[in-house]
Image 1 (cartoon, rainbow, N blue to C red):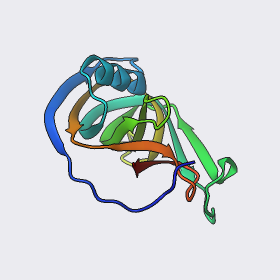
Image 2: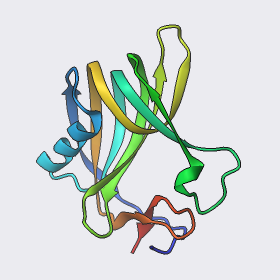
Image 3: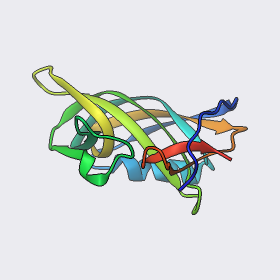
Image 4: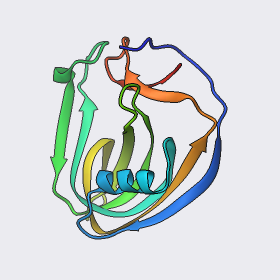
Length: 157
């Protein structure tokens, strides 16, 4: 495990990739493909709207302690479809393999207008999703399992 500590790092967004995902596309697989095809090692989700289905959130249970263990996490599956009201997050290479590690949070709206959200694990596009991804340059930050939280966190060399 990597040592968890505070840091500040300045970086830049040197370009933005705009994309439209189509019905039944896996949101995470589509993001991985964009990252690979456009050479984006470190990125930030600037904006995303559309509609999704087959959504899976994972949230920490009440009264969990640190480090967070697997049994402290609670998954919630929702078939949808839902309006994608907000999607934000980032992706950075993992410390060991260098593969992108996505950390996304979403807020979705039901047909009745209720909303739910959390840490997004899975979602498929329902009608369409429009997404804007910023390429981060000048960063040495990566993702690794933190010795404090027990979760994949942004860490600095």
